[in-house]
Amino acid sequence: MRWKLTDFVAAMSVAALALVACTAPPSDDTPARTRSQSDNLVLASAKALMPPEGTQRADLPLPDSEGAMLLDQYCTVCHGLSSPGTHSTTDWPVVMRRMWLRTERVAEQHDIPVPNAAERLTMTRYMLEHAFEVAGDDLPDFVGREYYMLTCERCHALPDPRQHTSQDWPAVVTRMRQHMVDLLGNAPIEAELQDISAYLQQVSR
Ligand code: HEC
Ligand code: HEC
Image (tube, rainbow, N blue to C red; front, side, top):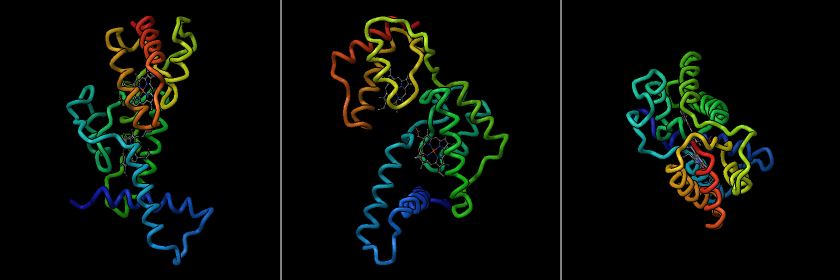
């Protein structure tokens, strides 16, 4: 293999450190210990946001479509494959744009494939086609609506309650609770989560 994950992450950490350098220029007399500590922090914080390993192309919607094949080709170089259903229609264009920038930034030095304009469009369209739908501003007014709106928009756009059945929502809410614990270090109390689940079940399809 020509590349290693640590190489990319190191290259990206250098870019991030260069940003930090605007306020505190690292000089040659920066103690080595401090520098590797901030490298480690950048690495850990980037990794906390990366799609986890383990998703295969076969797990994606329409796995033999051109979009899924391109994702498998270009998006597995630095981290695991991300399923289009994990982000909303409003979030994907922004995430994809960031990924092109990250790819271009390290491509030459690390000899990784860079998608062309047509391929980028195909991948973005594929993501949007299978992304989760965002709620409109006509959410029905039942008990739990306020908690839903406050809690479920903290990390991504507010999902449209109609995209899951009433049987499916409680499991999604439980998974989201775990994301909150892992990523934010806190989660709403059980009573609020139950109100959210009840609300979603009420207005689901
Ligand atoms: C050059 C390395 C590299 C490539 C190639 C790459 N990524 Fe990433 N990706 C990263 C890094 C670093 C992060 C964590 C920081 C961030 O979110 O920008 C990340 C994070 C992500 C996240 C989580 C961020 C969020 O907002 O939820 C998603 C989803 C993602 N990548 C999707 C993709 C897709 C889809 C592709 C292919 C089009 C891709 N990545 C290709 C480096 C890469
Ligand atoms: C701590 C951040 C965070 C919060 C807060 C959060 N989510 Fe998520 N959500 C995620 C992540 C990460 C993913 C993608 C991975 C996954 O699907 O588990 C996601 C994906 C989703 C998806 C798309 C995947 C699917 O199964 O349909 C839905 C729907 C969703 N969240 C609903 C909710 C609801 C409802 C709440 C409020 C109870 C909520 N989220 C709060 C992080 C969060």
